[in-house]
Length: 181
Image 1 (cartoon, helix red, strand yellow):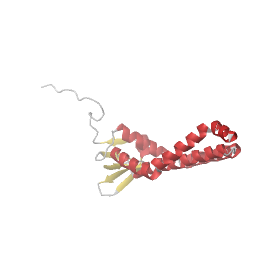
Image 2: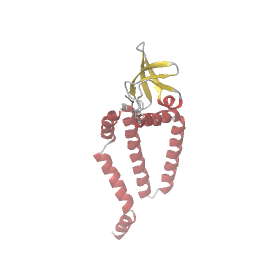
Image 3: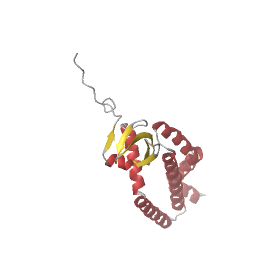
Image 4: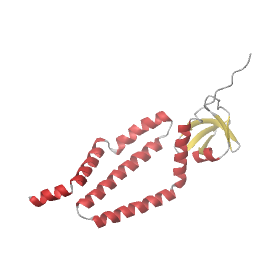
């Protein structure tokens, strides 16, 4: 009995963290998080992809943390280090493979937070003119005069010259000079 109590004292923090992660996943499962984020991101003008991405990272991240904690509690530190190294390498490979997607997602966040481009605005980019329909996480939808829709990667909107036909001085944060009568 004394050995069990000593083991519990020695591993109390890891047991507490594992219990907290299990409770968190029970209270807020990844699917519930995805739905709530989808509703919240929808009010900011993002598409469903952002909430799915965050919920997936949350789901796998909590499972990975639990796996590492349980290998530690079982005394398998070597296995935990191997798992952690493999996860780090897999993350590096995924980030390298998806670097264009990551760039477009970050550009989409910047575009939404900046507020200079909104649905209904008229823009010209790369010789193409149209009306912004929606700012999604990865791309912006632009309807041309002929009714076709362009999917413009968000990174392109940050790195290419864009002629913005709807941007007013007020949206730029500038005051219009008073006119003299």
